[in-house]
Structure formats: C-alpha cells, structure tokens
Length: 218
Image 1 (cartoon, rainbow, N blue to C red):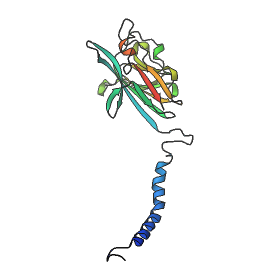
Image 2: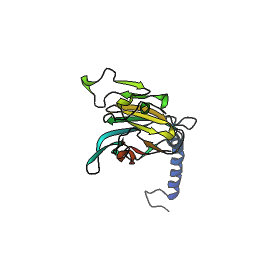
Image 3: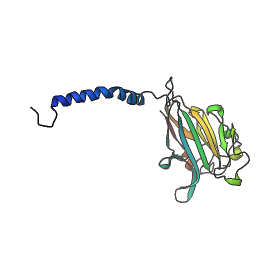
Image 4: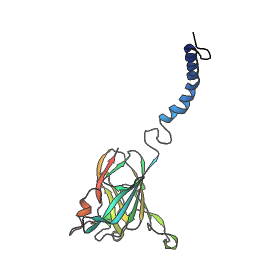
C-alpha cells in the first residue's frame, strides 16, 4: 500500500535501473578515455610525448651570513622562487630547461668549462641579454651554441653522472632540452670558482641549494 501521490519502492527501483542502463554507454565514452592512456601525453612505448618545463634563475649577490654575498640558483615556479636543493625531473620525458642569469663572468673560468654536453642536439640556445629590450638588443638576439668562451662564463649547471653540463653566461638566458632515461638521485653543481675562500670553492660552492644540490629523476 502506498501513500497517495508517491511512487512505490518497486517503481523507484525500476526507474533507477532504467536510468542506469541509459547512461552506461555515455559514462564509458566520456569517462573511460580520460583515465586510460592519453595519446597527447604518452606514446606507444610508454614514453611521454609532452614537454616538462624547468626554469632556473641564477642570482648574484644573495645575502650570505652577516657580511657576505654569494651567487645562488633558484627554481622558478607557481610559488615564486624556491631553493634548488632538490630538483624533481620526470624520466622518459622531453625537458625544456631554461636558465636565466642575472650575474657577471666569473674570474678563473676556462674554455673547457664552457663546453655543452648531454643536451638534445648537443647544443643550447643562447639569448643575449636577460634584460635587453628595444634598441639595446644585439643584432644576433639568439643562436644555438655548442660552447662559450671561458671569459664569458659566469657559472655552469653540471650533472656529471648524467653527462650533462650547461654553460651559463652572465646576463644571458640559456634554453636546453634534456631527455633522461634512467631514474635515480644525482648531484648537480657549478664548475666555476664562484664561491668564497682563496680558491673560490667555499661558501655557496659547497652549500646545498646555492651552487650545488640534487636532481631526482623519477
């Protein structure tokens, strides 16, 4: 017996089953593909076809202690600039690494330190002048290079275990592409003697998150 104007429980059950049968094909078509392999983000071999963006800013004269300044790398992201002590990178993915330098050349840098290694194509795209604009831009605004002279070198971003070294020219921007095929945790550091002490190898050079740190590939 039912109340007047209200459907019975049996009627509600029949209605629910009918709605479910009607919507199953649409749910499969719209929901299942979004949780399966997406052709835009993966390839048939399981490798990602998207591009991961990593942007580093290299800043000179960051406060160090009470009466000293040192150069420092930062990761630039949605939360602003964060320390580069542990950088996370994806495996089997095209990585665009952009390094923006606000610095000047480091005395003692050599031509050997200025050689590019481990990037896709064996080069980096060098853009003259991080802050250049208007008539201040040089004739050659950007070009691919495989090395830079030591006299122009401010720093490097070097991961020896992965065979990667990217020269950083003071005041310029470098764009390199990487493709990492093995997971693990690796060290990165700067090769130029840009720290403190008699040989320039102390201070920022030996402090995680300044001129050295880790890269975790996963």
